[in-house]
Length: 250
Ligand code: COA
Image (tube, rainbow, N blue to C red; front, side):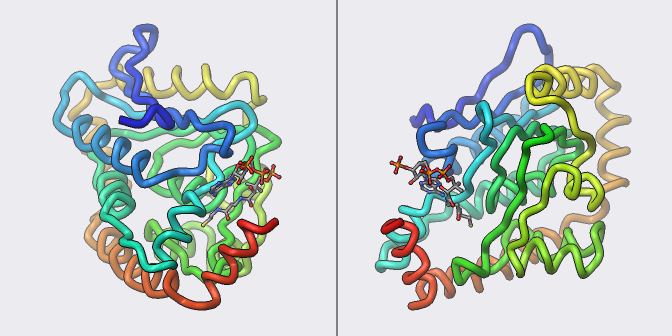
């Protein structure tokens, strides 16, 4: 199993399962194997009573540069997509456990949209959120086309998801994409402490509160599938292939 993402249970933070990107040489770009490992970890966490909170973390200066471009290219060239991405997105969106995340630096593509399914996200001032879907001839994913307009309004949703405008940490905070901004060297401790605090709360009360706040997930899961249909079709398009080739050549 890949070590490009690590699943950890730190002793100092009881009840917390950490999902930590560990591929800094490739800016924590997410491969199919990484999605599969994360989906498995989320599914197991759902039935493991000793896991009471989940925390996503990246590496120094980088949360994730998004989906691995080589996997996009392989699919564009006629390969199979595999079910790993969708399995991960569905497990993430349907998670019954609270999820927190910490961002220090780059958060691109799914590196941004992951946080739409997190309950509290802390980011460093140097963080940058960007979803260049349309620039890559792709479309929004992770139900972002449904969730972002709801909390940020049409204009900011369009700027982020269609125009591919980068959002600074301050802009992400103003838009409601993240909970707060913390200095980079305090992200890890802050996120783990936050997760451990949630893990220590009465689990059933927290589960109900979270469920009420998040509402019915059926529309979110349906939008994930709807977006994925367009995404897969666009991945096969000539315009997407040209964009991937431009990335490979740069
Ligand atoms: N998929 C695969 N590899 C990636 C990657 C991705 N999404 N993002 C970065 N990498 C790799 C680069 O190919 C490079 O590998 P190499 O050293 O073997 O050449 C390494 O990570 C470092 O990236 P580099 O581009 O040299 O760093 P940078 O600081 O100049 O730029 C980014 C960083 C993230 C801005 C730039 O790499 C980028 O735009 N990546 C693509 C992001 C993206 O569009 N993701 C998909 C969203 S849907």
